[in-house]
Amino acid sequence: MERVQQLAEKNAVVVFSVSSCCMCHAMKRFFRGLGVNAIVYELDQVAGGKEMERALAAVMGRGPPVPAVFIGGRLVGPTERVMALHLNGTLGHMLREAGAIWIL
Image 1 (tube, rainbow, N blue to C red):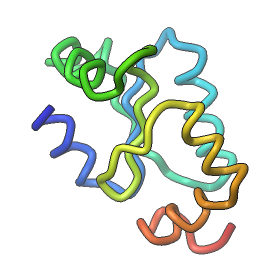
Image 2: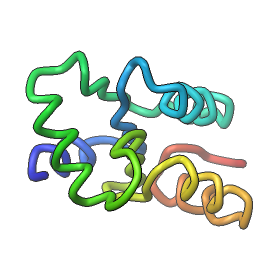
Image 3: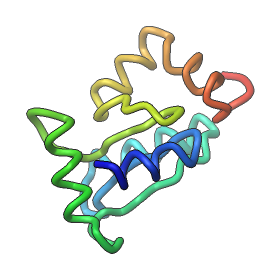
């Protein structure tokens, strides 16, 4: 999990993904639509990706370990959590605070 955290802290928004995952694809498109330049790590295409996926699975709890979204170095969670934050108006504030966007 240490490597995951180090990568997550380097950018405002980081998405850990698997290239064949439809929810990962939807999350990447969602952030692009908001004007957020999220850094994406495709765990099936990077060295050590399987280990990072196992570490994320341990932290994320039940359900799939990807997409795992970090904002401002903090784990936000999977798609459902990101969308809940968007719907209640919290996501925009988090993205602005992390420096990912100027306005929303």
